[in-house]
Amino acid sequence: MSITERDDSGASHPAIETVEGKRGYELVVAASFMVSVLATVGLGVSYWLGGQPQIEGALLFVTLGGIGIGMVAWGKYLVPQGPYVQERETLKSEILEREAFLESLERGQRQLGRRPFLGKLLGLSVGLFGIINIFPFLRSLGPQPKKALFTTPWKAGALIVSVGGAPITVDTLEVGGIQTVFPSYDVGGAISQTVLIRIGDTNWTTLPGRETWGPNGYLAYSKICTHAGCPVGLYQELTQQLLCPCHQSLFDVLTGATPVFGPAPRPLPQLPIYFDSKGNLRAQAGYDQPVGPGFWERG
Image: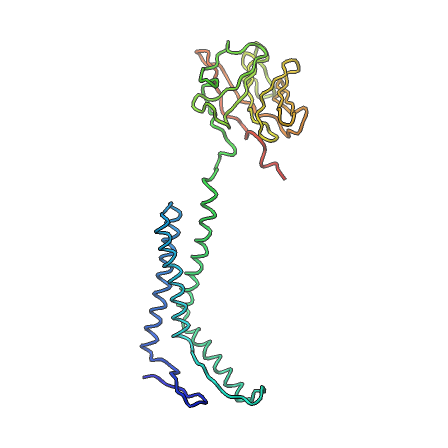
C-alpha cells in the first residue's frame, strides 16, 4: 500500500512507493548499469583486437543506452518527485517553511544515500566508458617502436652486399673507392644503408677499441646523417672526408667519422666488419649506437 500527500490545491499524489515497487525499480536500474558495463568491456576488447564497425557501433549503442535508461529510471522512480506547489504572498520564508524545506532536502539526500550500490554501478559504467575512449588514441599511434629506435637490422655475421645483391670481397673497391652496401637480407633498407670506403690496403684503427673494425683499409659507416637524416654519399678522397650534401656536414673517416664542419652533432656510427674464410665481407656485430639524428638529444 502506498502513502499519499496532499498539496495546497487539494490534489493528492504518491509520497512513498511500496517497498516491492521500489525494489523492482532498483533492479531495473542495476541491470541497466550492468549491461552498460559489460557492453563497455566488450567494446574495448573488440576495438583493441581490430573488431568490426558494425559490432562496435552496436556495443556503443548498448553502452550509452544502458547508462541513459538507468539514470532516467533512477531519477523518475527512486527519488522524490513532487511537484509541491504553495502560494506565497511574500518572498520571506517563515521558520516552519524553512524547516519543511530542509526536511524535504534531507529526504532526497536519504533516498540517494540508501542506494550506494547503484551509485557505484553508475560510476563503474561511466568510468569504464571514459577509459575505453583512450583506446582509439593509443591504437591510432600504430605499432610500438620498442627497440627499433635504437637498433638496425645489422647483426653479427651479416653478409655485406651491394645494391644489386653482390657480395663484397677484398677486391671489390680500389683505394679511394666508395659504395653503398646493405646486409644481404635487407637490401635497400633505409635504416640499414651503409657507406663503405676503402682508404688503403692495410688494416686501419679509427679509435681505441676498434682495432679490428677496418680490415684491409675498408671502413663502414652509417649513411644516415646524424643531423637531419640525409644520405651521406659524397667522399672527398684528398681530405678523406664524407660530405652530407643537405647541410654540408663534414666527417673525418680516419677518426671514426667525427664531424669537423657543419651542424651534425655527433659522429656517424661505425660498423665493425671482417673478411670471412671465403673472402666475403661480413659484419662483426650491429651498430653499437643508434643511427641517424639523435632524437634523445633534441630539446
